[in-house]
Image 1 (cartoon, one colour):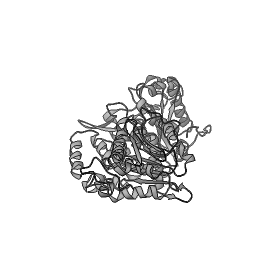
Image 2: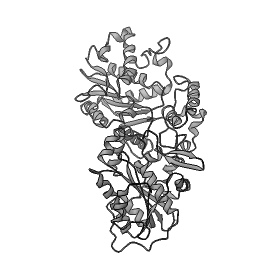
Image 3: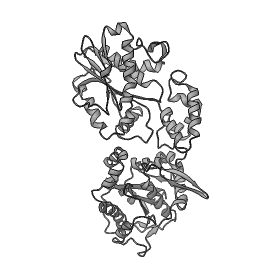
Image 4: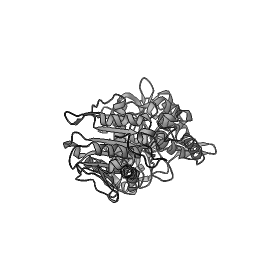
Length: 524
C-alpha cells in the first residue's frame, strides 16, 4: 500500500516503491508490522526517527499517514500530522493531497479537502488532519494515529509537553494506534521535549532502558567518531544520510560544507547538526572551546557538593555573574585526597528579570531548574543570598582555601561575602581573578585535565550547555572565552569554574579536615 503511493514532487511522479531506499521500507514495515490483528493491539506504538535533513522525511511522513488512513478500521477515527508551524505543515500536507488527487483508485476511497488540510475516508469517515501547532489547538482531540514532524522545533516551546500530551491522549482508548516522531538534530543544544525524547531513545538504544513498546531509529555517529571528528570526512557522510546518492545529493553536501567553512564563526556547527546529526555542544563549533568535545570524558555521576567535600582535602570557589539577563554562577573545585584529581560542581541562579528578558532560553532554563542546577529566585537580593549560602557551607567544612571573583563584578556580592568573613582582609580569602586573557591558563588546564581524566564533574546539563556555548576568541597574545553576540548562549557558571580553577592551579595547601561544627550541606 505504501509502495503504491505516488511522489508528486519527483519528475515522472514515481511511486515510493520505485524510488525509496530499503531503510524507508524497513521503517514502514516496523510501524505497520508490529500489530496483532487478532487482538487489535499495536505491540510497538511509539517510534522515533532521527535523520539528517533532505532525506525525504516530510514526504515519507505523508505516505505513512495516508497508509494508516487507508488501513484504519475504526469509524470516525482521527489521524493527525502535527507540525510546529504552518510552513512545515505544508511540507506534509501538499504531498499527502497530491498522492490522493493524482490517483483515481485512491479518489474512490479518500476525499481530499485541501483548504482544511484534511483527507477523509469515504467509508469509515475517519479523517487525516495536518495541524500546525502555532495556529491551531490540539486540545480535546482523540487521535488514534499521531505523527509529529520536526520534534526539535517543539523542543523550543515551553508549552510543547502539554500540547503533545493532549495530541496523543486518544491512544489510551485506541490500542491499535501509534505515535511517530520525526526530527533532524536541533541547530542549538537540545532542550524541552526534544531533549527528553532524544535521551530516552538513546538510552533504549544503548540498553540502559528496556522498553517493549518503543522503537527508535537514530542515525548518529558513534562516540569514537564524534571525539575524533570523523564526521567531517565526506567519506563518512553516509552514516546519517541513508539516502545519500538518491534523495540526498553528495555534491550538494560537499558544496554546502565549503560554503559554511567560508562563513566563519559557528556556521559549521549548523551544517554538522542539520546534515550530519551532530549535536550542538559536542565540540562542533569551528570556534568552540576545545573542552566542550572532551566534557563527556569527565563524568562522575557520584559527585554532588556533599561527596565532593567528603572526598577532597582543599576547595576553591569561583563566582561569575553579569547583568540582569545573565545567570549568577558559582562553581566549586576540590582536590581529591589520594588521587589529587580535581572534582568540580556548579550551580546558577536567575532572577525574574532574567527569565523575562531571555524568553528564548526559557525551555532550557526550565529543564535546568527541574534538575536542581538552576535556581529561580523571586527577588534580586535572594540570588546573592543563596549564592553566599553555598559559600558559607563550603567555608563551614574547613576546606575552603580561596574564593575567586571577577574584579569588575557586582559589589553587592563582595559586600554579602564580607558578612561571612570572606574578604580581601580576612586571611586574604577573597581574590579578584584576572579575566579575559588572564584566564587562559585556567582554561587550558581544565582542557588538559578533561583529556587525561584528572578533572571530574557530575554531568550537569547546565554545565554541558554552557560548555557548548563557549566561543574561543583569539587575542594578539593568546585567547579568551566569550559567549555569542546574541547573548542567549550563557556561560556564567563555566566562567565561575575557570575562576575556581585559576585558584586551584596555585596549589593551595591541604586543610587539616572538617571543622567540628561542620554539617553536611543541603545543596545536592
